[in-house]
Length: 197
Image 1 (cartoon, rainbow, N blue to C red):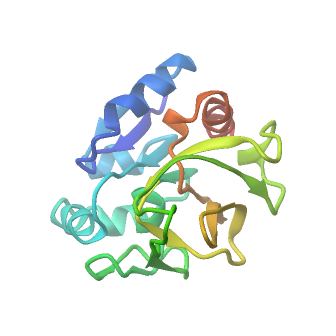
Image 2 (spheres, rainbow, N blue to C red; image 1 turned 120 degrees about the horizontal axis):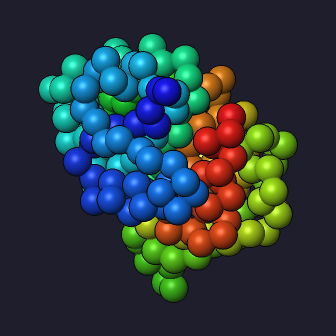
């Protein structure tokens, strides 16, 4: 049976993501091996940190062309979602280019510090199997300083001074700006949906 693979991006959320999947009865493998990632049933691209060093790590491991060529379901989480985009102001960095949107810095304001850390409501804008069983207005947990503006690939929005894409999809590539592994029942349902795609 093909494995569910979490790409070893060096991020701090690898263990918590594995535990979240284990709670759903799925054993996930953390890997930086190109063949194992290419042959996986599902691929998760997590990330905590900055876009430029994360892309340098993927390039050093030879994973950039591997990730771009994947045809199975792929889920980018937080920085992982941003890495799916064309480029990021953080660095700046050229990213994987699987979604055409750029990644921009959040703007701090009184009462609205950056990074954005905490629970925020999700507003669905498109029906998608990834969000099945996730009621509109459900809360998810965010920790980020950069964002993708809502666009044609957005499945759900959140609002933090400005609207931002909370979940996106293009073909077999999905992304969430929030952390499903830290989002209680909402996150568990989303991960369950991803595993069933």
